[in-house]
Length: 515
Image (cartoon, rainbow, N blue to C red; front, top):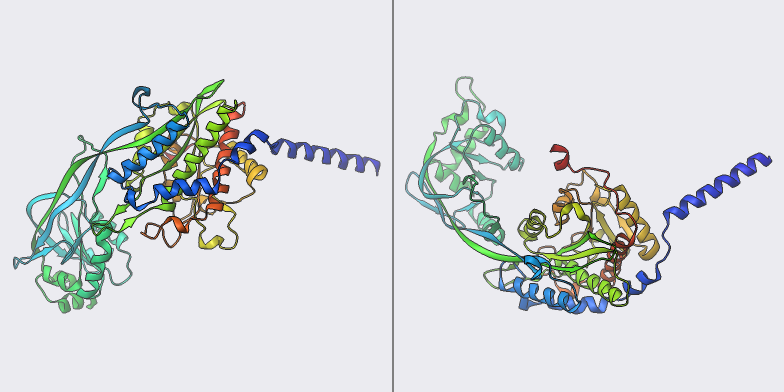
Protein backbone atom coordinates (compact mmCIF):
# COMPACT_ATOMS: atom_id res chain seq x y z
CA UNK A 1 0.00 0.00 0.00
CA UNK A 2 2.78 2.42 0.92
CA UNK A 3 4.66 1.53 -2.23
CA UNK A 4 1.56 2.23 -4.33
CA UNK A 5 1.03 5.62 -2.70
CA UNK A 6 4.67 6.54 -3.15
CA UNK A 7 4.55 5.54 -6.79
CA UNK A 8 1.47 7.68 -7.33
CA UNK A 9 3.10 10.62 -5.51
CA UNK A 10 6.23 10.42 -7.67
CA UNK A 11 4.08 10.18 -10.81
CA UNK A 12 2.18 13.29 -9.74
CA UNK A 13 5.41 15.21 -9.23
CA UNK A 14 6.59 14.14 -12.69
CA UNK A 15 3.32 15.31 -14.27
CA UNK A 16 3.58 18.68 -12.53
CA UNK A 17 7.15 19.00 -13.77
CA UNK A 18 6.10 18.31 -17.37
CA UNK A 19 3.21 20.78 -17.10
CA UNK A 20 5.57 23.43 -15.72
CA UNK A 21 7.88 22.94 -18.67
CA UNK A 22 4.96 23.19 -21.10
CA UNK A 23 3.52 26.41 -19.65
CA UNK A 24 4.84 29.94 -19.98
CA UNK A 25 5.35 32.36 -17.15
CA UNK A 26 3.47 35.59 -17.66
CA UNK A 27 5.88 38.23 -18.93
CA UNK A 28 4.63 41.47 -17.41
CA UNK A 29 6.60 43.52 -19.95
CA UNK A 30 4.96 41.70 -22.87
CA UNK A 31 1.58 42.08 -21.24
CA UNK A 32 2.12 45.81 -20.76
CA UNK A 33 2.94 46.52 -24.38
CA UNK A 34 0.34 44.14 -25.78
CA UNK A 35 -2.11 46.43 -24.03
CA UNK A 36 -1.16 49.24 -26.42
CA UNK A 37 -2.86 47.29 -29.22
CA UNK A 38 -6.40 48.61 -28.93
CA UNK A 39 -9.65 48.42 -30.83
CA UNK A 40 -9.81 52.22 -30.90
CA UNK A 41 -6.41 52.61 -32.58
CA UNK A 42 -7.20 49.82 -35.02
CA UNK A 43 -10.40 51.55 -36.06
CA UNK A 44 -8.49 54.78 -36.73
CA UNK A 45 -5.99 53.06 -39.02
CA UNK A 46 -8.56 50.94 -40.82
CA UNK A 47 -10.91 53.85 -41.40
CA UNK A 48 -8.16 55.38 -43.52
CA UNK A 49 -6.85 52.24 -45.26
CA UNK A 50 -10.35 51.06 -46.23
CA UNK A 51 -11.76 54.49 -47.10
CA UNK A 52 -13.25 55.32 -50.48
CA UNK A 53 -10.39 57.76 -51.11
CA UNK A 54 -7.98 54.81 -51.51
CA UNK A 55 -10.24 53.36 -54.21
CA UNK A 56 -9.83 49.71 -53.20
CA UNK A 57 -6.00 49.66 -53.23
CA UNK A 58 -5.63 47.69 -56.45
CA UNK A 59 -2.02 46.80 -57.25
CA UNK A 60 -0.22 49.54 -59.15
CA UNK A 61 -2.97 52.13 -58.79
CA UNK A 62 -3.01 55.52 -57.11
CA UNK A 63 -4.97 54.10 -54.18
CA UNK A 64 -2.43 51.35 -53.56
CA UNK A 65 0.37 53.90 -53.51
CA UNK A 66 -1.58 56.12 -51.12
CA UNK A 67 -1.88 53.13 -48.78
CA UNK A 68 1.85 52.45 -49.16
CA UNK A 69 2.63 56.05 -48.18
CA UNK A 70 0.39 55.80 -45.13
CA UNK A 71 2.10 52.60 -43.98
CA UNK A 72 5.58 53.98 -44.70
CA UNK A 73 4.92 57.15 -42.71
CA UNK A 74 3.68 55.11 -39.78
CA UNK A 75 6.79 52.90 -39.84
CA UNK A 76 8.96 56.01 -40.06
CA UNK A 77 7.19 57.67 -37.13
CA UNK A 78 7.91 54.58 -35.00
CA UNK A 79 11.64 54.81 -35.67
CA UNK A 80 11.76 51.67 -37.77
CA UNK A 81 14.65 51.49 -40.20
CA UNK A 82 14.52 51.47 -44.02
CA UNK A 83 16.27 48.35 -45.31
CA UNK A 84 15.26 48.18 -48.97
CA UNK A 85 17.32 49.59 -51.84
CA UNK A 86 20.62 49.54 -49.93
CA UNK A 87 19.02 50.69 -46.68
CA UNK A 88 17.74 53.88 -48.27
CA UNK A 89 14.02 53.19 -48.55
CA UNK A 90 11.02 51.64 -46.84
CA UNK A 91 9.87 50.55 -50.31
CA UNK A 92 10.93 47.39 -52.12
CA UNK A 93 9.86 48.27 -55.67
CA UNK A 94 9.37 45.87 -58.56
CA UNK A 95 7.67 45.75 -61.94
CA UNK A 96 4.83 43.61 -63.19
CA UNK A 97 3.17 43.12 -66.52
CA UNK A 98 -0.48 44.05 -66.78
CA UNK A 99 -2.19 41.99 -69.42
CA UNK A 100 -5.66 42.73 -70.67
CA UNK A 101 -7.66 41.55 -73.65
CA UNK A 102 -8.16 43.90 -76.55
CA UNK A 103 -10.11 42.72 -79.60
CA UNK A 104 -11.40 39.18 -79.07
CA UNK A 105 -13.87 37.40 -81.34
CA UNK A 106 -14.49 34.37 -83.49
CA UNK A 107 -16.11 34.22 -86.92
CA UNK A 108 -18.29 31.42 -88.20
CA UNK A 109 -18.15 29.83 -91.63
CA UNK A 110 -21.01 32.16 -92.58
CA UNK A 111 -18.74 35.08 -91.61
CA UNK A 112 -20.84 36.07 -88.61
CA UNK A 113 -18.69 37.79 -85.96
CA UNK A 114 -19.23 36.59 -82.39
CA UNK A 115 -17.79 39.20 -80.05
CA UNK A 116 -16.38 38.76 -76.56
CA UNK A 117 -18.88 39.61 -73.79
CA UNK A 118 -21.68 39.78 -76.33
CA UNK A 119 -21.96 36.39 -78.00
CA UNK A 120 -19.11 34.54 -76.27
CA UNK A 121 -16.96 34.82 -73.13
CA UNK A 122 -13.25 34.26 -73.57
CA UNK A 123 -11.80 32.38 -70.59
CA UNK A 124 -8.65 31.41 -72.46
CA UNK A 125 -5.03 32.45 -72.08
CA UNK A 126 -3.82 32.11 -75.68
CA UNK A 127 -2.67 35.27 -77.46
CA UNK A 128 -3.77 35.05 -81.10
CA UNK A 129 -2.94 38.51 -82.49
CA UNK A 130 -3.87 37.77 -86.09
CA UNK A 131 -6.99 36.13 -87.46
CA UNK A 132 -6.35 32.38 -87.50
CA UNK A 133 -8.51 29.68 -89.03
CA UNK A 134 -9.16 26.62 -86.89
CA UNK A 135 -11.27 23.52 -87.23
CA UNK A 136 -13.96 22.81 -84.61
CA UNK A 137 -15.02 19.23 -83.84
CA UNK A 138 -18.23 18.44 -81.98
CA UNK A 139 -17.37 16.20 -78.98
CA UNK A 140 -20.85 15.91 -77.50
CA UNK A 141 -20.74 15.89 -73.72
CA UNK A 142 -16.97 15.67 -73.69
CA UNK A 143 -16.69 12.29 -71.98
CA UNK A 144 -13.82 9.97 -72.86
CA UNK A 145 -16.12 7.64 -74.84
CA UNK A 146 -17.36 10.58 -76.95
CA UNK A 147 -13.93 10.90 -78.57
CA UNK A 148 -14.01 7.45 -80.15
CA UNK A 149 -13.48 7.91 -83.85
CA UNK A 150 -12.92 11.66 -83.57
CA UNK A 151 -9.71 13.37 -84.65
CA UNK A 152 -9.30 16.44 -82.42
CA UNK A 153 -5.55 16.88 -82.45
CA UNK A 154 -4.61 20.59 -82.75
CA UNK A 155 -8.30 21.44 -83.22
CA UNK A 156 -10.96 23.08 -81.08
CA UNK A 157 -13.58 20.84 -79.49
CA UNK A 158 -17.16 21.92 -78.85
CA UNK A 159 -18.52 20.43 -75.60
CA UNK A 160 -21.99 20.50 -74.08
CA UNK A 161 -21.71 20.41 -70.28
CA UNK A 162 -25.36 20.44 -69.23
CA UNK A 163 -25.32 16.83 -68.07
CA UNK A 164 -23.07 16.79 -65.01
CA UNK A 165 -21.33 20.20 -64.90
CA UNK A 166 -17.91 18.53 -64.54
CA UNK A 167 -16.37 20.81 -67.13
CA UNK A 168 -12.87 20.86 -65.60
CA UNK A 169 -12.54 17.10 -66.07
CA UNK A 170 -13.90 17.45 -69.59
CA UNK A 171 -11.29 20.05 -70.45
CA UNK A 172 -8.57 17.75 -69.09
CA UNK A 173 -9.93 14.92 -71.25
CA UNK A 174 -9.94 17.17 -74.34
CA UNK A 175 -6.35 18.19 -73.66
CA UNK A 176 -5.31 14.55 -73.26
CA UNK A 177 -6.83 13.87 -76.69
CA UNK A 178 -4.63 16.59 -78.19
CA UNK A 179 -7.18 19.42 -78.54
CA UNK A 180 -5.76 22.93 -78.96
CA UNK A 181 -8.71 24.54 -77.19
CA UNK A 182 -12.37 24.40 -76.26
CA UNK A 183 -15.77 25.91 -76.84
CA UNK A 184 -18.12 25.04 -73.98
CA UNK A 185 -21.82 25.54 -73.40
CA UNK A 186 -23.80 24.46 -70.37
CA UNK A 187 -27.43 24.87 -71.32
CA UNK A 188 -29.85 27.74 -70.94
CA UNK A 189 -30.93 30.27 -73.54
CA UNK A 190 -29.37 33.54 -74.72
CA UNK A 191 -31.10 35.50 -71.94
CA UNK A 192 -29.43 33.29 -69.34
CA UNK A 193 -26.13 33.67 -71.17
CA UNK A 194 -26.48 37.45 -70.95
CA UNK A 195 -26.78 37.16 -67.18
CA UNK A 196 -23.65 35.01 -67.15
CA UNK A 197 -21.84 37.70 -69.13
CA UNK A 198 -22.72 40.33 -66.53
CA UNK A 199 -21.45 38.14 -63.70
CA UNK A 200 -18.28 37.10 -65.52
CA UNK A 201 -17.26 40.52 -66.80
CA UNK A 202 -16.25 41.79 -63.34
CA UNK A 203 -13.53 39.17 -62.97
CA UNK A 204 -12.76 37.77 -66.42
CA UNK A 205 -12.51 41.16 -68.09
CA UNK A 206 -10.20 42.62 -65.43
CA UNK A 207 -6.53 43.10 -66.34
CA UNK A 208 -4.22 40.43 -64.95
CA UNK A 209 -0.85 41.05 -63.38
CA UNK A 210 2.18 38.81 -63.38
CA UNK A 211 5.95 38.83 -63.53
CA UNK A 212 7.58 39.46 -66.86
CA UNK A 213 9.46 36.46 -68.15
CA UNK A 214 11.24 37.18 -71.39
CA UNK A 215 12.56 33.63 -71.65
CA UNK A 216 9.14 32.06 -71.39
CA UNK A 217 7.66 30.99 -74.70
CA UNK A 218 4.26 32.51 -75.36
CA UNK A 219 1.75 29.70 -74.87
CA UNK A 220 -1.84 29.41 -73.81
CA UNK A 221 -5.19 27.80 -74.40
CA UNK A 222 -8.14 28.97 -76.47
CA UNK A 223 -11.31 28.65 -74.39
CA UNK A 224 -14.67 30.19 -75.33
CA UNK A 225 -17.96 29.84 -73.45
CA UNK A 226 -21.26 30.48 -75.20
CA UNK A 227 -25.00 29.78 -75.34
CA UNK A 228 -26.29 26.55 -76.95
CA UNK A 229 -27.90 28.41 -79.88
CA UNK A 230 -24.60 30.12 -80.62
CA UNK A 231 -22.80 26.78 -80.38
CA UNK A 232 -25.09 25.45 -83.11
CA UNK A 233 -24.34 28.55 -85.19
CA UNK A 234 -20.63 27.85 -84.82
CA UNK A 235 -21.12 24.29 -86.10
CA UNK A 236 -23.28 25.62 -88.98
CA UNK A 237 -26.21 23.45 -87.98
CA UNK A 238 -29.37 23.47 -85.89
CA UNK A 239 -29.38 23.02 -82.12
CA UNK A 240 -31.91 20.20 -82.46
CA UNK A 241 -29.41 18.22 -84.57
CA UNK A 242 -26.69 18.62 -81.93
CA UNK A 243 -29.14 17.45 -79.26
CA UNK A 244 -30.17 14.41 -81.33
CA UNK A 245 -26.54 13.50 -82.00
CA UNK A 246 -25.89 13.38 -78.27
CA UNK A 247 -29.07 11.42 -77.54
CA UNK A 248 -28.84 8.84 -80.34
CA UNK A 249 -27.17 5.53 -79.73
CA UNK A 250 -24.44 4.38 -82.08
CA UNK A 251 -25.74 2.17 -84.86
CA UNK A 252 -22.66 -0.02 -84.94
CA UNK A 253 -21.44 1.41 -88.23
CA UNK A 254 -20.86 5.06 -87.50
CA UNK A 255 -20.70 7.02 -84.26
CA UNK A 256 -23.63 9.41 -83.92
CA UNK A 257 -21.39 12.37 -83.05
CA UNK A 258 -19.34 11.84 -86.21
CA UNK A 259 -22.38 12.76 -88.28
CA UNK A 260 -21.91 16.38 -87.17
CA UNK A 261 -19.40 17.68 -89.64
CA UNK A 262 -16.45 19.74 -88.36
CA UNK A 263 -16.66 23.48 -88.95
CA UNK A 264 -14.00 26.03 -89.76
CA UNK A 265 -13.93 29.22 -87.73
CA UNK A 266 -11.64 32.23 -87.45
CA UNK A 267 -10.24 33.19 -84.05
CA UNK A 268 -8.62 36.39 -82.81
CA UNK A 269 -7.61 37.15 -79.21
CA UNK A 270 -5.48 40.25 -79.01
CA UNK A 271 -3.62 40.92 -75.76
CA UNK A 272 -2.51 44.32 -74.51
CA UNK A 273 0.58 44.46 -72.28
CA UNK A 274 1.85 47.34 -70.16
CA UNK A 275 4.29 47.72 -67.27
CA UNK A 276 3.00 48.32 -63.75
CA UNK A 277 5.21 49.54 -60.93
CA UNK A 278 4.39 48.55 -57.38
CA UNK A 279 6.13 48.05 -54.03
CA UNK A 280 6.24 46.13 -50.77
CA UNK A 281 6.58 48.30 -47.65
CA UNK A 282 9.28 47.21 -45.18
CA UNK A 283 10.03 48.56 -41.70
CA UNK A 284 12.88 47.00 -39.73
CA UNK A 285 13.60 46.81 -36.01
CA UNK A 286 17.11 45.48 -35.29
CA UNK A 287 17.49 43.10 -32.39
CA UNK A 288 20.20 42.96 -29.77
CA UNK A 289 22.35 39.86 -29.15
CA UNK A 290 20.47 37.70 -31.69
CA UNK A 291 19.97 40.42 -34.30
CA UNK A 292 21.11 38.25 -37.23
CA UNK A 293 18.01 36.10 -36.84
CA UNK A 294 14.85 37.65 -38.32
CA UNK A 295 11.15 37.32 -37.55
CA UNK A 296 8.95 38.52 -40.43
CA UNK A 297 5.41 39.75 -39.73
CA UNK A 298 3.33 40.20 -42.88
CA UNK A 299 -0.02 41.23 -44.28
CA UNK A 300 -1.09 42.27 -47.76
CA UNK A 301 -2.30 45.82 -48.21
CA UNK A 302 -3.65 45.54 -51.76
CA UNK A 303 -7.24 44.68 -52.66
CA UNK A 304 -9.50 44.50 -55.73
CA UNK A 305 -9.80 48.20 -56.58
CA UNK A 306 -12.95 49.40 -58.26
CA UNK A 307 -15.13 48.60 -61.24
CA UNK A 308 -15.17 50.74 -64.40
CA UNK A 309 -18.52 52.04 -63.14
CA UNK A 310 -16.88 53.26 -59.92
CA UNK A 311 -18.03 50.60 -57.44
CA UNK A 312 -15.28 50.42 -54.77
CA UNK A 313 -14.05 47.22 -53.13
CA UNK A 314 -12.77 48.68 -49.85
CA UNK A 315 -11.33 45.43 -48.50
CA UNK A 316 -11.75 46.35 -44.84
CA UNK A 317 -11.33 42.76 -43.69
CA UNK A 318 -9.35 41.58 -46.73
CA UNK A 319 -6.77 42.64 -45.81
CA UNK A 320 -7.14 46.05 -44.26
CA UNK A 321 -7.61 44.22 -40.96
CA UNK A 322 -4.30 42.35 -41.21
CA UNK A 323 -2.44 45.46 -42.32
CA UNK A 324 -3.87 47.41 -39.41
CA UNK A 325 -2.77 44.63 -37.05
CA UNK A 326 0.79 44.85 -38.42
CA UNK A 327 0.81 48.63 -37.82
CA UNK A 328 -0.36 48.16 -34.24
CA UNK A 329 2.05 45.30 -33.50
CA UNK A 330 4.93 47.38 -34.88
CA UNK A 331 3.90 50.24 -32.62
CA UNK A 332 3.78 47.95 -29.57
CA UNK A 333 7.33 46.74 -30.26
CA UNK A 334 8.50 50.31 -30.89
CA UNK A 335 7.11 51.47 -27.54
CA UNK A 336 8.75 48.50 -25.83
CA UNK A 337 12.10 49.36 -27.40
CA UNK A 338 11.73 53.02 -26.43
CA UNK A 339 11.23 51.87 -22.83
CA UNK A 340 14.44 49.81 -22.96
CA UNK A 341 12.94 46.46 -23.95
CA UNK A 342 14.26 45.89 -27.46
CA UNK A 343 13.75 42.39 -28.94
CA UNK A 344 16.72 40.06 -28.98
CA UNK A 345 15.96 38.96 -32.54
CA UNK A 346 15.32 41.45 -35.31
CA UNK A 347 11.81 41.96 -36.63
CA UNK A 348 10.85 42.86 -40.19
CA UNK A 349 7.36 44.33 -40.47
CA UNK A 350 6.30 43.93 -44.09
CA UNK A 351 3.07 44.76 -45.87
CA UNK A 352 3.11 43.25 -49.34
CA UNK A 353 1.43 44.18 -52.57
CA UNK A 354 -0.04 41.96 -55.29
CA UNK A 355 -1.48 39.25 -53.04
CA UNK A 356 -4.83 39.45 -54.80
CA UNK A 357 -3.03 38.99 -58.12
CA UNK A 358 -1.34 35.75 -57.11
CA UNK A 359 0.83 36.29 -53.98
CA UNK A 360 3.16 38.39 -56.12
CA UNK A 361 4.63 40.72 -53.49
CA UNK A 362 5.64 37.93 -51.12
CA UNK A 363 6.96 35.92 -54.05
CA UNK A 364 9.12 38.86 -55.07
CA UNK A 365 10.47 39.25 -51.54
CA UNK A 366 11.29 35.56 -51.10
CA UNK A 367 13.04 35.56 -54.49
CA UNK A 368 14.85 38.80 -53.59
CA UNK A 369 15.07 38.76 -49.78
CA UNK A 370 16.57 41.71 -47.96
CA UNK A 371 17.71 39.24 -45.29
CA UNK A 372 18.73 35.66 -46.12
CA UNK A 373 15.85 33.23 -45.76
CA UNK A 374 18.21 30.93 -43.85
CA UNK A 375 18.29 33.59 -41.14
CA UNK A 376 14.51 34.02 -41.14
CA UNK A 377 13.18 32.27 -38.05
CA UNK A 378 9.44 32.49 -38.71
CA UNK A 379 6.83 34.28 -40.79
CA UNK A 380 3.65 35.31 -38.97
CA UNK A 381 1.11 36.23 -41.65
CA UNK A 382 -2.13 38.07 -40.87
CA UNK A 383 -4.81 37.94 -43.56
CA UNK A 384 -8.40 38.74 -42.51
CA UNK A 385 -8.76 39.03 -38.71
CA UNK A 386 -11.58 41.57 -38.41
CA UNK A 387 -14.78 39.53 -38.77
CA UNK A 388 -16.64 36.50 -37.40
CA UNK A 389 -17.71 33.74 -39.77
CA UNK A 390 -21.06 31.94 -39.55
CA UNK A 391 -19.53 28.89 -37.88
CA UNK A 392 -18.48 30.98 -34.87
CA UNK A 393 -21.51 33.22 -34.44
CA UNK A 394 -22.15 33.47 -30.70
CA UNK A 395 -18.64 32.23 -29.88
CA UNK A 396 -16.56 35.04 -31.35
CA UNK A 397 -13.32 34.57 -29.36
CA UNK A 398 -11.57 32.41 -31.93
CA UNK A 399 -9.08 32.53 -34.76
CA UNK A 400 -8.17 29.99 -37.42
CA UNK A 401 -4.52 28.96 -37.36
CA UNK A 402 -3.08 27.46 -40.52
CA UNK A 403 0.38 26.05 -41.10
CA UNK A 404 1.76 26.27 -37.56
CA UNK A 405 2.70 22.57 -37.48
CA UNK A 406 3.65 22.12 -41.14
CA UNK A 407 7.38 22.74 -40.69
CA UNK A 408 8.04 23.12 -36.98
CA UNK A 409 6.41 21.12 -34.21
CA UNK A 410 8.06 23.47 -31.73
CA UNK A 411 6.47 26.55 -33.32
CA UNK A 412 3.02 24.97 -33.07
CA UNK A 413 3.54 24.07 -29.41
CA UNK A 414 4.89 27.54 -28.60
CA UNK A 415 1.86 29.12 -30.28
CA UNK A 416 -0.47 27.00 -28.16
CA UNK A 417 1.33 27.92 -24.93
CA UNK A 418 1.31 31.63 -25.79
CA UNK A 419 -2.44 31.54 -26.36
CA UNK A 420 -3.07 29.60 -23.14
CA UNK A 421 -1.01 32.12 -21.19
CA UNK A 422 -2.22 35.41 -22.64
CA UNK A 423 -5.27 35.41 -24.90
CA UNK A 424 -7.27 32.17 -24.40
CA UNK A 425 -8.78 32.29 -27.86
CA UNK A 426 -10.31 29.19 -29.41
CA UNK A 427 -7.60 28.16 -31.88
CA UNK A 428 -9.48 26.51 -34.73
CA UNK A 429 -7.40 24.21 -36.96
CA UNK A 430 -10.21 23.16 -39.30
CA UNK A 431 -8.53 24.76 -42.33
CA UNK A 432 -5.14 23.31 -41.41
CA UNK A 433 -6.31 19.87 -42.52
CA UNK A 434 -4.35 18.56 -45.50
CA UNK A 435 -7.66 17.49 -47.06
CA UNK A 436 -9.38 20.85 -46.63
CA UNK A 437 -10.89 21.60 -50.05
CA UNK A 438 -10.40 25.37 -49.57
CA UNK A 439 -6.60 24.91 -49.53
CA UNK A 440 -6.10 28.15 -47.59
CA UNK A 441 -2.57 27.08 -46.66
CA UNK A 442 -1.59 27.76 -50.28
CA UNK A 443 -3.61 30.96 -50.71
CA UNK A 444 -1.91 33.69 -48.71
CA UNK A 445 1.55 35.21 -48.47
CA UNK A 446 2.95 32.89 -45.80
CA UNK A 447 3.09 30.13 -48.40
CA UNK A 448 5.97 31.76 -50.27
CA UNK A 449 7.95 31.59 -47.02
CA UNK A 450 6.83 28.06 -46.21
CA UNK A 451 7.90 26.66 -49.55
CA UNK A 452 11.35 28.11 -48.81
CA UNK A 453 11.50 26.17 -45.52
CA UNK A 454 10.60 29.08 -43.23
CA UNK A 455 8.14 28.02 -40.47
CA UNK A 456 4.88 29.96 -40.66
CA UNK A 457 1.61 30.71 -38.90
CA UNK A 458 -1.33 32.10 -40.86
CA UNK A 459 -3.96 33.95 -38.77
CA UNK A 460 -7.42 34.04 -40.37
CA UNK A 461 -11.05 34.67 -39.38
CA UNK A 462 -12.61 32.66 -42.22
CA UNK A 463 -14.68 33.97 -45.09
CA UNK A 464 -18.07 35.65 -44.87
CA UNK A 465 -20.84 36.93 -47.13
CA UNK A 466 -18.86 40.11 -47.92
CA UNK A 467 -15.66 38.33 -49.00
CA UNK A 468 -14.40 39.89 -52.25
CA UNK A 469 -17.46 42.11 -52.48
CA UNK A 470 -17.92 45.87 -52.32
CA UNK A 471 -19.74 45.32 -49.01
CA UNK A 472 -16.50 44.44 -47.15
CA UNK A 473 -16.52 47.75 -45.27
CA UNK A 474 -15.27 49.17 -41.98
CA UNK A 475 -18.61 49.31 -40.15
CA UNK A 476 -18.83 45.49 -40.32
CA UNK A 477 -15.50 44.93 -38.55
CA UNK A 478 -15.58 43.49 -35.00
CA UNK A 479 -12.72 45.49 -33.53
CA UNK A 480 -12.84 43.73 -30.16
CA UNK A 481 -12.00 40.41 -31.83
CA UNK A 482 -9.44 42.13 -34.03
CA UNK A 483 -7.72 43.52 -30.93
CA UNK A 484 -7.50 40.07 -29.30
CA UNK A 485 -6.13 38.46 -32.46
CA UNK A 486 -3.57 41.25 -32.86
CA UNK A 487 -2.43 40.73 -29.28
CA UNK A 488 -2.06 36.99 -29.89
CA UNK A 489 0.27 37.67 -32.83
CA UNK A 490 2.22 40.20 -30.75
CA UNK A 491 2.72 37.78 -27.85
CA UNK A 492 3.77 35.02 -30.26
CA UNK A 493 6.29 37.33 -31.96
CA UNK A 494 7.55 38.54 -28.56
CA UNK A 495 8.17 35.00 -27.37
CA UNK A 496 9.90 34.07 -30.64
CA UNK A 497 12.08 37.17 -30.40
CA UNK A 498 13.17 36.73 -26.80
CA UNK A 499 13.75 32.98 -26.36
CA UNK A 500 17.28 31.56 -26.32
CA UNK A 501 16.93 29.19 -29.29
CA UNK A 502 15.13 29.69 -32.58
CA UNK A 503 12.27 27.25 -33.17
CA UNK A 504 13.48 23.99 -34.67
CA UNK A 505 12.73 23.14 -38.27
CA UNK A 506 11.83 19.44 -38.19
CA UNK A 507 9.73 18.95 -41.34
CA UNK A 508 10.04 19.65 -45.05
CA UNK A 509 7.68 21.11 -47.64
CA UNK A 510 6.80 19.11 -50.74
CA UNK A 511 9.01 21.46 -52.78
CA UNK A 512 12.01 20.84 -50.51
CA UNK A 513 11.52 17.08 -50.63
CA UNK A 514 11.47 17.14 -54.42
CA UNK A 515 14.84 18.91 -54.65
